[in-house]
Image 1 (cartoon, helix red, strand yellow):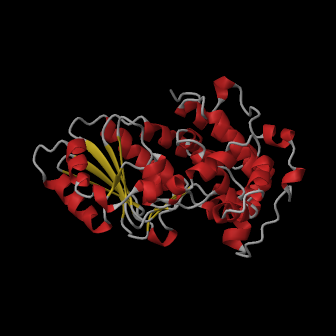
Image 2 (cartoon, rainbow, N blue to C red):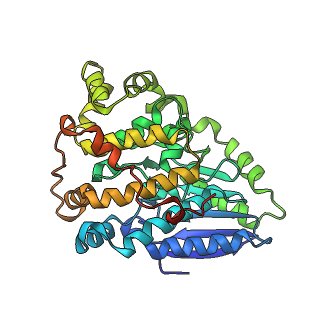
Image 3 (spheres, rainbow, N blue to C red):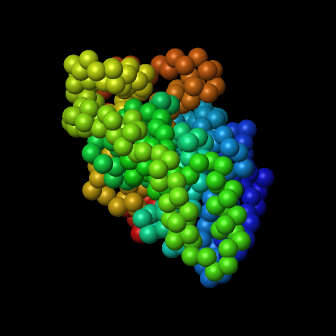
Length: 363
């Protein structure tokens, strides 16, 4: 369909291949529109039994949204008020909702880097998802590292993780592996990466194959290849739950500072590099999301992203990480002590009346 999104149909399986390897398959607005268009077409096509989304590169499934685009547009218009920027997030979140409620098996081969917007196009709902990770999977919602919050519906799926794991992943932006993804409920199956072509060939050539059963049976042969209980999240679950159950980010920091365990100190050091304001906003987002539907989470995040670009923290974060690459963002406020409850609450203040919200039609 486009240079960066390749479409094929084999054996009644619709395949979407992300093909922007130099940018780690970062999503552009054109890519979002192409994926949405074909998913809507296949949803109504009785001949399509399932959808498979994958990457042409072994390095990354999808590293997220095109943050350089965010910076260029955000700095070219006052207070981030760009129609293209508005369209990007409205259409991306609409796509995330479509995927979550997709009525057919939705197979995501999450091989390599899977971050940010890449999670949004992989995390289908319980009725359809078949999320596969490999030994090369590097998964994260790392938005606090660029002065943003974890979006694309992550308020919903992070709040569904066991215990305080979702709060930990969102507030720290830490990278996890396949074992961790399985333990956190963010993946369903593990396959060694050399087996992905074998699985794809089986799906695309098997006669009258029942997709979900075939994948479950195929993956069962590798159940002993990885142990979720041996991953970082499982090993440190008690520590994560204890510290991240605190009601505020300053309280989490204080709790971690009193813990001499290497994992606690490593987490503390990681958080000291993140945007103080956006860590606080993210914790509030995940707490609120636990009581919301996917549609309501996406509506809330759409409001939050407007405030985020108006506030400007994300522009500074992308400048430091991607543009100037000095890795020295000047966060505002610079310290947690300077973050007030009013600053946090401002990110959740309505931008549009309900009847005019860009995502008002999501059900």
